[in-house]
Image (cartoon, rainbow, N blue to C red; front, side, top):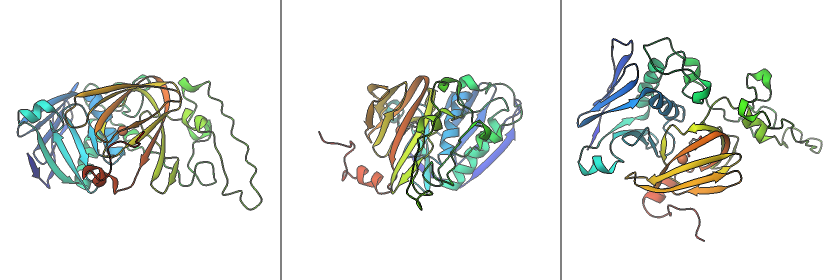
Length: 327
Ligand code: PHB
Ligand code: FE
């Protein structure tokens, strides 16, 4: 079922101190431990820490590529201008029982609603971007906020990282100390000797040192943009807070340590495979799956995305394959 709605509403404050919100026919509330979501054909509960971690990514990535599943029931689909909010749409049981529900909203409207929920429901003790080992609790009665953390912008290089004017965290002085898990990562930078006149254009940098200073997890930065080719390295610890159903092929290069990927059918959630990636491994995730990564130790991952806006339609219409290479 699909309906189109325009209204966004902030409701009253409940006994635990949190505001309730609605977006179309969806209603959102939280208590000390749980988020409650309801829609005309059903309702759902999620632990508030996993909900906020997923919401943080959806907001920070402006609904990302394709589908952001918060869990097996609730999530969003990006149509790049509008966004579907759904319940049970990519869940075989909900579909078969005809209990799935979806609404399409203009992107600014859902963005504002989700930002407001994230701000109101995040207590001062909790940083949804941080590893669970490096932040306090999401639970309990309303207690302040952490707007500095939840409005953090992802780091996107202004120029290629390394050339003057980039936005690279270079040293402890910038507030980006080397993470406890990467204490053994060498911090020396490559020596570059450009011809006179090219000093501002020729550069190299130590990507491992750069990543060792990341203070967030599961939040790709963008270190190079070459036409539609985006190199998005990131540091990972614990579980990717969303189950990502991409609308294009995506490549992973495991730069250090190990991540296990649970891969499911994108539409039904049926298990398809488990991919264990060790340092040096490369994989391509097809466009008809969804995936969630598990990183037992903080690891470094390079995500390579093709940003072309023509790809989703080419794949959806069968013009382009769902996999990247024919062997
Ligand atoms: C992904 O969905 O492909 C993804 C998202 C965030 C990460 C890594 C991978 O940090
Ligand atoms: Fe993905």
